[in-house]
Image (cartoon, rainbow, N blue to C red):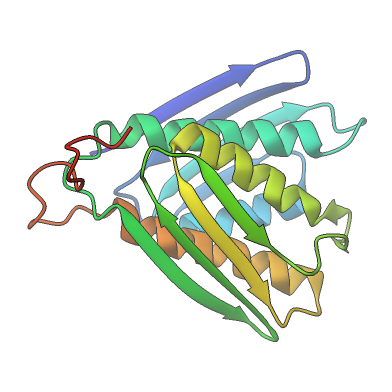
Length: 195
């Protein structure tokens, strides 16, 4: 099984992530940010990943450090669990509606970190969770996992719906990309390496 455990401790946060790629979609989340825990649950559920995240952060300052450092650890967990990426499908894509909101996520475990993100509600919040933190989380994941990730939100009016559609689409795209394909015998790249 492909499993990783990552810890990161700074003066701002203390984060632990455990990832089981061949999971069942179960998750345990305790970041101190209820809405963020809810969103991480969608990634696990729809990615069929077992994901455990605990974080203690300087939430009295704001949510930014905790969200970013969780993203760094989640990205590092994917990098470690996938290793040389032999046999994976590499690419994943999903479009997911949440009522009026539609989000798409398309990704490539290319080894080249790049985030292209578009959400018309970035300046809005779902409760106390500012939607601009979604791109902070995604950028951190991308950097540590070595992902190229395109995410777009369309037709959204409700911030909660927009965020939920993004995290569900991300989960489904990850599920496709990390799945082992019996026809892929080595690294899915003409270069022979994804790094």
